[in-house]
Image 1 (cartoon, helix red, strand yellow):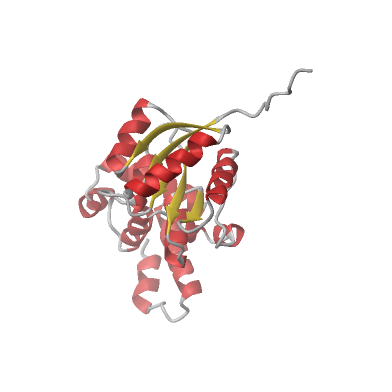
Image 2 (spheres, rainbow, N blue to C red):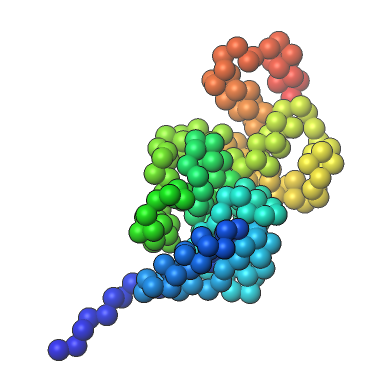
Length: 226
């Protein structure tokens, strides 16, 4: 009698961790699991990016404190690439790191002290399109679009609130005007607004919801002049 083969496709995975022992242990775990194909490993963010160009992967597992870019900046760079992997952040659990990872575009989060089985199952869930943040209520976070903004998008929104033009945004954020337009388009989509004035209005409305004492007369005057 022939055995029935598992019809699920194998998930390609790429790993990046600055600790060689952790990287070796994770590599062994993924290589033992028949659900995965380990395509590349790296100890730096730059190495991860270079490997991704050569050998695309469905899922990437990254150390949040990767040299030299760091996890947050790496996620921002990945978002500008064609068909980037869905990323699972592997880090020490804290409210700040969870929320920052989610806002930067991660699809999942796993604590460094969790059982290896949890990491493997998280990667399978992320590969299927799910968001996995065990320490956060993702649905509640996504109700406020401000929580989904990357650091660059948050900085751009704050700069918009000061009335900066695209050229001024380019100089302040040290990016090209084309990149400014790219980030603005993503920002508008996340906030469900159509233009700069609506984004600024959303910024002040959100800030006042979080801190009712934050509103000032100068803020209101600035909005009326937009």
